[in-house]
Length: 432
Image (cartoon, rainbow, N blue to C red; front, top):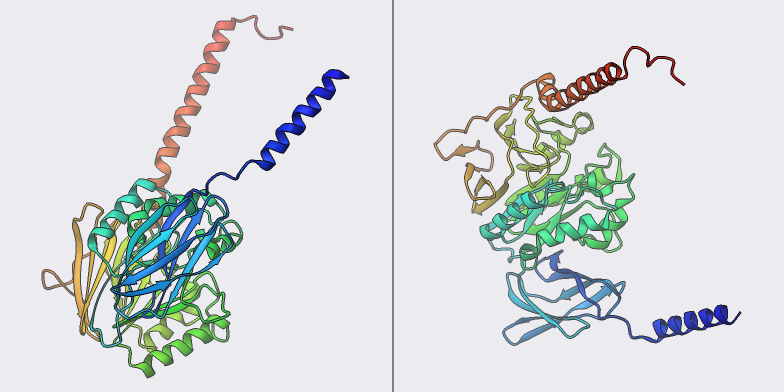
Protein backbone atom coordinates (compact mmCIF):
# COMPACT_ATOMS: atom_id res chain seq x y z
CA UNK A 1 0.00 0.00 0.00
CA UNK A 2 2.83 2.35 0.81
CA UNK A 3 4.38 1.85 -2.64
CA UNK A 4 1.05 2.33 -4.38
CA UNK A 5 0.37 5.51 -2.42
CA UNK A 6 3.82 6.89 -3.20
CA UNK A 7 3.29 6.22 -6.88
CA UNK A 8 -0.04 8.02 -6.86
CA UNK A 9 1.48 10.99 -5.03
CA UNK A 10 4.34 11.19 -7.53
CA UNK A 11 1.90 11.07 -10.45
CA UNK A 12 -0.17 13.87 -8.86
CA UNK A 13 2.90 16.07 -8.36
CA UNK A 14 4.07 15.55 -11.94
CA UNK A 15 0.62 16.37 -13.31
CA UNK A 16 0.44 19.52 -11.20
CA UNK A 17 3.85 20.64 -12.39
CA UNK A 18 2.79 20.03 -16.00
CA UNK A 19 -0.36 22.11 -15.57
CA UNK A 20 1.38 24.94 -13.70
CA UNK A 21 4.43 25.08 -15.97
CA UNK A 22 4.40 27.92 -18.48
CA UNK A 23 3.50 26.94 -22.07
CA UNK A 24 6.44 26.57 -24.42
CA UNK A 25 7.19 29.49 -26.70
CA UNK A 26 5.03 29.58 -29.84
CA UNK A 27 7.46 28.72 -32.62
CA UNK A 28 6.85 29.70 -36.21
CA UNK A 29 5.59 26.76 -38.26
CA UNK A 30 4.69 28.38 -41.59
CA UNK A 31 6.65 31.52 -42.48
CA UNK A 32 4.68 34.56 -43.71
CA UNK A 33 3.17 34.24 -47.19
CA UNK A 34 1.00 36.67 -49.17
CA UNK A 35 -2.47 35.89 -50.52
CA UNK A 36 -5.48 37.84 -51.79
CA UNK A 37 -3.45 40.89 -52.78
CA UNK A 38 -5.44 43.61 -54.55
CA UNK A 39 -5.01 47.31 -55.24
CA UNK A 40 -6.11 48.37 -51.78
CA UNK A 41 -5.99 45.15 -49.75
CA UNK A 42 -3.57 42.34 -48.89
CA UNK A 43 -3.51 39.32 -46.57
CA UNK A 44 -0.35 38.07 -44.86
CA UNK A 45 -0.64 34.54 -43.49
CA UNK A 46 1.49 32.46 -41.14
CA UNK A 47 1.13 29.58 -38.71
CA UNK A 48 2.44 29.03 -35.18
CA UNK A 49 2.87 25.65 -33.52
CA UNK A 50 0.66 26.77 -30.61
CA UNK A 51 -1.95 29.52 -30.06
CA UNK A 52 -0.45 32.96 -29.66
CA UNK A 53 -0.86 36.64 -30.48
CA UNK A 54 0.70 38.08 -33.64
CA UNK A 55 0.79 41.72 -34.75
CA UNK A 56 1.97 43.10 -38.08
CA UNK A 57 2.53 46.46 -39.78
CA UNK A 58 3.02 47.62 -43.35
CA UNK A 59 5.10 50.72 -43.97
CA UNK A 60 5.49 52.96 -47.00
CA UNK A 61 7.30 56.20 -46.24
CA UNK A 62 5.52 57.78 -43.27
CA UNK A 63 2.36 55.72 -43.77
CA UNK A 64 1.84 52.80 -41.38
CA UNK A 65 -0.93 50.21 -41.72
CA UNK A 66 -1.85 47.82 -38.92
CA UNK A 67 -2.94 44.31 -39.81
CA UNK A 68 -6.34 43.09 -38.66
CA UNK A 69 -5.88 39.52 -37.47
CA UNK A 70 -8.48 36.90 -38.38
CA UNK A 71 -7.14 33.97 -36.46
CA UNK A 72 -7.83 30.73 -34.71
CA UNK A 73 -4.76 31.44 -32.59
CA UNK A 74 -2.53 29.16 -34.65
CA UNK A 75 -3.13 30.05 -38.31
CA UNK A 76 -3.09 33.84 -38.62
CA UNK A 77 -4.50 35.89 -41.51
CA UNK A 78 -3.38 39.50 -41.09
CA UNK A 79 -5.50 41.74 -43.33
CA UNK A 80 -4.37 45.19 -44.43
CA UNK A 81 -6.92 47.63 -45.88
CA UNK A 82 -6.64 51.12 -47.36
CA UNK A 83 -3.43 50.42 -49.28
CA UNK A 84 -2.27 52.25 -52.38
CA UNK A 85 -2.47 50.65 -55.81
CA UNK A 86 0.99 49.76 -57.07
CA UNK A 87 2.47 50.53 -53.67
CA UNK A 88 5.81 49.20 -52.44
CA UNK A 89 5.72 48.25 -48.76
CA UNK A 90 7.91 46.70 -46.09
CA UNK A 91 6.34 44.67 -43.32
CA UNK A 92 7.13 43.82 -39.73
CA UNK A 93 5.61 40.85 -37.91
CA UNK A 94 5.89 40.54 -34.13
CA UNK A 95 5.83 36.91 -32.96
CA UNK A 96 4.85 35.87 -29.42
CA UNK A 97 8.42 34.92 -28.47
CA UNK A 98 9.66 38.42 -29.31
CA UNK A 99 11.12 37.71 -32.75
CA UNK A 100 10.41 40.32 -35.45
CA UNK A 101 10.14 39.21 -39.08
CA UNK A 102 10.67 41.53 -42.04
CA UNK A 103 9.73 41.41 -45.72
CA UNK A 104 8.29 43.30 -48.66
CA UNK A 105 5.10 43.55 -50.71
CA UNK A 106 3.94 45.11 -53.98
CA UNK A 107 0.19 45.67 -54.30
CA UNK A 108 -1.76 45.27 -57.52
CA UNK A 109 -1.14 48.14 -59.97
CA UNK A 110 -3.59 50.97 -60.75
CA UNK A 111 -6.16 50.70 -63.54
CA UNK A 112 -4.12 52.68 -66.05
CA UNK A 113 -1.27 50.12 -66.05
CA UNK A 114 -0.46 48.55 -69.44
CA UNK A 115 2.34 46.19 -68.39
CA UNK A 116 2.45 43.13 -66.15
CA UNK A 117 4.77 40.25 -65.38
CA UNK A 118 3.69 37.06 -63.63
CA UNK A 119 4.47 33.34 -63.41
CA UNK A 120 2.30 30.24 -63.73
CA UNK A 121 3.00 26.65 -62.73
CA UNK A 122 1.27 23.76 -60.99
CA UNK A 123 1.14 20.07 -60.14
CA UNK A 124 4.15 20.48 -57.87
CA UNK A 125 3.21 17.64 -55.50
CA UNK A 126 5.23 14.41 -55.13
CA UNK A 127 8.83 15.57 -55.76
CA UNK A 128 9.94 18.14 -53.13
CA UNK A 129 13.35 18.81 -54.67
CA UNK A 130 11.94 19.35 -58.17
CA UNK A 131 9.35 21.76 -56.76
CA UNK A 132 11.94 23.58 -54.69
CA UNK A 133 14.04 24.11 -57.84
CA UNK A 134 11.04 25.33 -59.83
CA UNK A 135 10.04 27.74 -57.03
CA UNK A 136 13.60 29.13 -56.89
CA UNK A 137 13.54 29.69 -60.67
CA UNK A 138 10.18 31.45 -60.38
CA UNK A 139 11.62 33.73 -57.71
CA UNK A 140 14.57 34.55 -60.00
CA UNK A 141 12.06 35.48 -62.72
CA UNK A 142 10.81 38.21 -60.31
CA UNK A 143 7.07 38.00 -61.03
CA UNK A 144 4.49 40.40 -59.63
CA UNK A 145 2.32 37.42 -58.66
CA UNK A 146 2.15 33.64 -59.12
CA UNK A 147 -0.81 31.66 -60.42
CA UNK A 148 -0.70 27.99 -59.35
CA UNK A 149 -2.80 25.66 -61.54
CA UNK A 150 -3.54 23.22 -58.72
CA UNK A 151 -2.39 19.99 -57.05
CA UNK A 152 -0.12 21.95 -54.75
CA UNK A 153 -0.11 18.98 -52.37
CA UNK A 154 -0.54 15.24 -52.80
CA UNK A 155 -3.30 14.84 -50.22
CA UNK A 156 -5.25 17.86 -49.05
CA UNK A 157 -6.01 16.27 -45.68
CA UNK A 158 -2.33 15.69 -44.96
CA UNK A 159 -1.03 18.57 -42.82
CA UNK A 160 2.57 17.51 -43.49
CA UNK A 161 2.01 17.90 -47.25
CA UNK A 162 0.91 21.50 -46.73
CA UNK A 163 3.86 22.14 -44.45
CA UNK A 164 6.21 20.82 -47.12
CA UNK A 165 4.62 23.04 -49.77
CA UNK A 166 5.15 26.22 -47.76
CA UNK A 167 8.68 25.23 -46.76
CA UNK A 168 9.60 24.73 -50.42
CA UNK A 169 8.22 28.15 -51.36
CA UNK A 170 9.23 30.11 -48.26
CA UNK A 171 11.50 32.58 -50.10
CA UNK A 172 9.00 33.07 -52.93
CA UNK A 173 5.64 33.74 -51.32
CA UNK A 174 7.12 35.85 -48.53
CA UNK A 175 7.14 38.72 -51.08
CA UNK A 176 5.15 37.48 -54.11
CA UNK A 177 1.36 36.94 -53.85
CA UNK A 178 -0.02 33.47 -54.58
CA UNK A 179 -3.32 32.99 -56.42
CA UNK A 180 -4.27 29.28 -56.29
CA UNK A 181 -6.46 27.07 -58.45
CA UNK A 182 -8.18 24.20 -56.64
CA UNK A 183 -6.88 20.85 -57.92
CA UNK A 184 -8.28 17.39 -57.31
CA UNK A 185 -5.43 16.47 -54.93
CA UNK A 186 -6.32 19.37 -52.63
CA UNK A 187 -9.66 17.62 -52.07
CA UNK A 188 -8.17 14.22 -51.16
CA UNK A 189 -9.48 12.20 -49.48
CA UNK A 190 -13.13 12.20 -50.67
CA UNK A 191 -13.43 15.97 -50.54
CA UNK A 192 -12.29 16.25 -46.93
CA UNK A 193 -9.24 18.27 -47.96
CA UNK A 194 -11.42 21.30 -48.75
CA UNK A 195 -11.56 22.17 -45.06
CA UNK A 196 -7.76 22.24 -44.79
CA UNK A 197 -7.50 24.17 -48.08
CA UNK A 198 -9.77 26.91 -46.72
CA UNK A 199 -7.68 27.09 -43.56
CA UNK A 200 -4.41 27.86 -45.36
CA UNK A 201 -5.73 29.73 -48.39
CA UNK A 202 -7.33 33.14 -48.94
CA UNK A 203 -8.70 34.30 -52.29
CA UNK A 204 -10.50 37.46 -53.50
CA UNK A 205 -14.06 36.27 -52.79
CA UNK A 206 -17.10 38.43 -52.40
CA UNK A 207 -18.35 38.87 -48.84
CA UNK A 208 -19.96 35.72 -47.49
CA UNK A 209 -18.85 33.45 -50.36
CA UNK A 210 -16.85 30.31 -49.74
CA UNK A 211 -16.72 28.83 -53.28
CA UNK A 212 -13.22 28.10 -54.60
CA UNK A 213 -13.86 29.95 -57.89
CA UNK A 214 -13.11 33.66 -58.04
CA UNK A 215 -11.85 36.53 -60.22
CA UNK A 216 -9.03 38.97 -59.67
CA UNK A 217 -7.55 41.97 -61.44
CA UNK A 218 -3.88 42.67 -61.92
CA UNK A 219 -4.08 45.32 -64.58
CA UNK A 220 -4.04 45.06 -67.49
CA UNK A 221 -5.16 41.47 -66.76
CA UNK A 222 -8.30 39.93 -65.31
CA UNK A 223 -8.13 36.23 -64.42
CA UNK A 224 -11.22 34.06 -63.95
CA UNK A 225 -10.26 31.13 -61.69
CA UNK A 226 -12.64 28.18 -62.06
CA UNK A 227 -13.20 25.09 -59.95
CA UNK A 228 -12.96 22.22 -62.44
CA UNK A 229 -13.91 19.73 -59.72
CA UNK A 230 -17.47 21.06 -59.95
CA UNK A 231 -20.11 20.96 -62.66
CA UNK A 232 -19.96 23.89 -65.09
CA UNK A 233 -23.09 23.11 -67.10
CA UNK A 234 -25.70 25.78 -67.81
CA UNK A 235 -27.79 26.67 -64.78
CA UNK A 236 -25.27 25.61 -62.15
CA UNK A 237 -24.10 28.14 -59.61
CA UNK A 238 -20.58 28.27 -61.01
CA UNK A 239 -21.73 28.62 -64.64
CA UNK A 240 -24.10 31.43 -63.68
CA UNK A 241 -21.20 33.16 -61.97
CA UNK A 242 -18.94 32.61 -65.00
CA UNK A 243 -21.51 33.99 -67.46
CA UNK A 244 -21.93 37.08 -65.28
CA UNK A 245 -18.14 37.57 -65.03
CA UNK A 246 -17.75 37.30 -68.81
CA UNK A 247 -20.38 40.01 -69.28
CA UNK A 248 -18.74 42.16 -66.61
CA UNK A 249 -15.36 41.85 -68.33
CA UNK A 250 -16.93 42.94 -71.60
CA UNK A 251 -18.58 45.93 -69.91
CA UNK A 252 -15.31 46.86 -68.21
CA UNK A 253 -13.43 46.53 -71.53
CA UNK A 254 -10.71 44.48 -69.85
CA UNK A 255 -7.54 44.63 -72.01
CA UNK A 256 -6.62 40.96 -71.40
CA UNK A 257 -9.03 38.32 -70.12
CA UNK A 258 -7.54 34.99 -69.00
CA UNK A 259 -9.04 31.91 -67.35
CA UNK A 260 -7.41 29.30 -65.12
CA UNK A 261 -8.56 25.86 -64.00
CA UNK A 262 -6.99 22.56 -63.06
CA UNK A 263 -8.70 20.12 -65.45
CA UNK A 264 -9.03 21.88 -68.78
CA UNK A 265 -11.05 21.46 -71.99
CA UNK A 266 -7.92 21.60 -74.17
CA UNK A 267 -5.00 19.20 -73.79
CA UNK A 268 -3.11 16.59 -75.76
CA UNK A 269 -1.48 14.98 -72.74
CA UNK A 270 -2.19 11.82 -70.76
CA UNK A 271 -5.57 13.00 -69.43
CA UNK A 272 -6.43 14.70 -72.70
CA UNK A 273 -9.23 17.24 -73.26
CA UNK A 274 -11.99 17.17 -70.66
CA UNK A 275 -14.87 15.70 -72.63
CA UNK A 276 -17.43 16.51 -69.93
CA UNK A 277 -16.50 20.21 -69.91
CA UNK A 278 -16.69 20.31 -73.71
CA UNK A 279 -20.13 18.66 -73.62
CA UNK A 280 -21.20 21.23 -71.02
CA UNK A 281 -20.16 24.01 -73.40
CA UNK A 282 -17.29 25.40 -71.35
CA UNK A 283 -14.84 25.72 -74.25
CA UNK A 284 -17.40 27.62 -76.36
CA UNK A 285 -18.43 29.79 -73.40
CA UNK A 286 -14.84 30.88 -72.78
CA UNK A 287 -14.14 31.52 -76.46
CA UNK A 288 -17.42 33.37 -77.10
CA UNK A 289 -17.07 35.28 -73.83
CA UNK A 290 -13.79 36.90 -74.90
CA UNK A 291 -11.28 34.78 -72.97
CA UNK A 292 -8.07 34.87 -75.00
CA UNK A 293 -5.87 32.50 -72.99
CA UNK A 294 -6.58 29.57 -70.65
CA UNK A 295 -4.08 28.20 -68.12
CA UNK A 296 -4.52 24.54 -67.16
CA UNK A 297 -2.80 21.89 -65.05
CA UNK A 298 -3.58 18.21 -64.35
CA UNK A 299 -1.38 16.91 -67.20
CA UNK A 300 2.20 16.89 -65.89
CA UNK A 301 3.94 18.61 -68.80
CA UNK A 302 4.17 21.83 -70.80
CA UNK A 303 1.83 22.31 -73.73
CA UNK A 304 0.83 25.32 -75.82
CA UNK A 305 -1.91 25.49 -78.42
CA UNK A 306 -4.61 27.49 -80.17
CA UNK A 307 -8.11 26.03 -80.67
CA UNK A 308 -9.94 28.28 -83.12
CA UNK A 309 -8.76 31.42 -81.37
CA UNK A 310 -8.93 30.13 -77.79
CA UNK A 311 -5.27 29.87 -76.80
CA UNK A 312 -4.20 27.64 -73.95
CA UNK A 313 -1.18 26.68 -71.87
CA UNK A 314 -0.95 23.44 -69.91
CA UNK A 315 1.59 23.93 -67.14
CA UNK A 316 1.65 20.94 -64.81
CA UNK A 317 5.39 20.41 -64.54
CA UNK A 318 6.02 21.76 -61.06
CA UNK A 319 7.27 18.51 -59.53
CA UNK A 320 4.69 15.77 -60.11
CA UNK A 321 5.68 12.67 -62.14
CA UNK A 322 5.90 13.67 -65.80
CA UNK A 323 3.43 12.41 -68.40
CA UNK A 324 4.93 11.60 -71.80
CA UNK A 325 1.77 10.51 -73.58
CA UNK A 326 0.94 12.97 -76.38
CA UNK A 327 -2.38 12.55 -78.17
CA UNK A 328 -1.26 15.26 -80.63
CA UNK A 329 -4.53 17.11 -81.30
CA UNK A 330 -4.65 19.38 -84.33
CA UNK A 331 -4.70 22.50 -82.17
CA UNK A 332 -1.47 21.61 -80.32
CA UNK A 333 1.60 23.77 -81.08
CA UNK A 334 4.13 22.71 -78.44
CA UNK A 335 4.50 19.68 -76.16
CA UNK A 336 7.36 19.15 -73.70
CA UNK A 337 7.22 16.57 -70.86
CA UNK A 338 9.57 18.40 -68.51
CA UNK A 339 9.58 20.18 -65.15
CA UNK A 340 9.18 23.90 -65.78
CA UNK A 341 7.36 27.13 -65.06
CA UNK A 342 5.75 29.64 -67.41
CA UNK A 343 6.60 33.33 -67.38
CA UNK A 344 4.07 35.79 -68.80
CA UNK A 345 4.89 39.35 -69.81
CA UNK A 346 2.33 41.86 -71.05
CA UNK A 347 3.23 45.08 -72.79
CA UNK A 348 0.18 46.86 -74.12
CA UNK A 349 -1.54 44.60 -76.64
CA UNK A 350 1.31 42.10 -76.76
CA UNK A 351 1.39 38.98 -74.57
CA UNK A 352 4.63 36.98 -74.39
CA UNK A 353 4.76 33.43 -73.04
CA UNK A 354 8.00 31.68 -72.15
CA UNK A 355 8.54 28.26 -70.60
CA UNK A 356 11.74 27.65 -68.65
CA UNK A 357 13.30 24.70 -66.84
CA UNK A 358 14.35 24.99 -63.17
CA UNK A 359 17.92 25.81 -64.28
CA UNK A 360 16.64 28.68 -66.43
CA UNK A 361 16.95 27.07 -69.86
CA UNK A 362 14.44 28.47 -72.36
CA UNK A 363 12.05 25.83 -73.72
CA UNK A 364 9.56 27.91 -75.65
CA UNK A 365 9.03 31.64 -76.21
CA UNK A 366 6.11 32.98 -78.21
CA UNK A 367 4.07 36.17 -78.41
CA UNK A 368 0.67 37.17 -79.73
CA UNK A 369 -1.69 40.10 -79.91
CA UNK A 370 -5.35 39.60 -79.13
CA UNK A 371 -7.13 38.00 -82.07
CA UNK A 372 -3.88 36.99 -83.78
CA UNK A 373 -1.89 33.71 -83.74
CA UNK A 374 1.24 32.92 -81.73
CA UNK A 375 4.51 34.10 -83.26
CA UNK A 376 7.54 32.38 -81.76
CA UNK A 377 11.21 33.24 -81.34
CA UNK A 378 12.20 31.93 -84.77
CA UNK A 379 9.24 33.59 -86.48
CA UNK A 380 7.05 30.47 -86.66
CA UNK A 381 5.32 28.32 -84.04
CA UNK A 382 7.73 25.82 -82.55
CA UNK A 383 6.74 22.24 -83.28
CA UNK A 384 5.90 19.81 -80.49
CA UNK A 385 8.55 17.53 -79.05
CA UNK A 386 6.57 14.33 -79.23
CA UNK A 387 6.21 11.69 -76.57
CA UNK A 388 4.48 8.36 -77.03
CA UNK A 389 1.50 9.09 -79.24
CA UNK A 390 -0.69 6.09 -78.41
CA UNK A 391 -2.18 5.03 -75.11
CA UNK A 392 -0.82 1.49 -75.64
CA UNK A 393 2.75 2.75 -76.12
CA UNK A 394 2.44 4.90 -73.01
CA UNK A 395 1.21 2.09 -70.79
CA UNK A 396 3.78 -0.34 -72.16
CA UNK A 397 6.52 2.11 -71.18
CA UNK A 398 5.04 2.65 -67.72
CA UNK A 399 4.37 -1.06 -67.19
CA UNK A 400 7.68 -2.35 -68.56
CA UNK A 401 9.71 -1.95 -65.30
CA UNK A 402 6.95 -3.67 -63.32
CA UNK A 403 6.73 -6.52 -65.85
CA UNK A 404 10.49 -7.04 -65.64
CA UNK A 405 10.34 -6.98 -61.83
CA UNK A 406 7.43 -9.43 -61.62
CA UNK A 407 9.00 -11.78 -64.19
CA UNK A 408 12.34 -11.74 -62.33
CA UNK A 409 10.57 -12.36 -59.01
CA UNK A 410 8.61 -15.28 -60.44
CA UNK A 411 11.71 -16.88 -61.98
CA UNK A 412 13.61 -16.45 -58.70
CA UNK A 413 10.76 -18.07 -56.79
CA UNK A 414 10.69 -21.05 -59.18
CA UNK A 415 14.47 -21.50 -58.99
CA UNK A 416 14.48 -21.38 -55.18
CA UNK A 417 11.58 -23.81 -54.99
CA UNK A 418 13.31 -26.26 -57.35
CA UNK A 419 16.59 -25.98 -55.42
CA UNK A 420 14.81 -26.76 -52.14
CA UNK A 421 13.17 -29.84 -53.64
CA UNK A 422 16.51 -31.14 -54.93
CA UNK A 423 18.15 -30.50 -51.57
CA UNK A 424 15.41 -32.37 -49.75
CA UNK A 425 15.97 -35.42 -51.96
CA UNK A 426 13.52 -37.99 -53.37
CA UNK A 427 12.20 -39.12 -49.95
CA UNK A 428 11.06 -35.67 -48.84
CA UNK A 429 7.45 -36.24 -49.92
CA UNK A 430 5.21 -37.50 -47.22
CA UNK A 431 7.50 -36.72 -44.30
CA UNK A 432 5.67 -35.94 -41.06
